[in-house]
Length: 182
Ligand code: HEC
Image (cartoon, protein in one colour):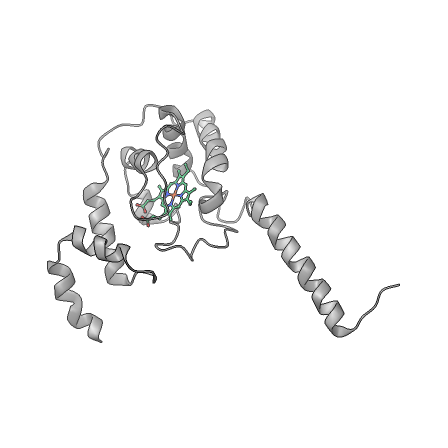
């Protein structure tokens, strides 16, 4: 595999250069590229030692869930696990599944930093000035207690387009099959 021979070059390349190169690529990142990006993120993401100031209880989780369902579901799904989001794995990099170990191993402070600052050169936006401090911290509480994958169904906006899609599809099949209705 030529990629294997390239591996040492990637290892020597400064992470920022690797990321700059990735920015020029339209294709999905390979495993090696993902690893470089992951390592770079770990260097860049701040807030590690900042404690979550909102209590971990039902009220904060519910408040977090509500904000999540306003602002984040369009990409992350209602359950934070991309359920029903048709383009989640078509983005480059793909939308993160927030239940995964890679995400859960961030500290609360890092998760809040990610929400506040976004992840540069990905589709993950910065919410500074849109969400206030407590809203972001409540969302972190929700991310720690995500519901079972699929249990909340698909975001409404995608459900409707799915239905329209299958309706027009069904109409098409009828015509093609020459069926008539009285
Ligand atoms: C426009 C689509 C979009 C929206 C809206 C969005 N995200 Fe993301 N999010 C992404 C993508 C794409 C990634 C993957 C980024 C990466 O791989 O670094 C991501 C990654 C993340 C991560 C993990 C970062 C990492 O290191 O992998 C967290 C946490 C996150 N999002 C939380 C949120 C929260 C909370 C909201 C709402 C306030 C939100 N996102 C809204 C697209 C979105």
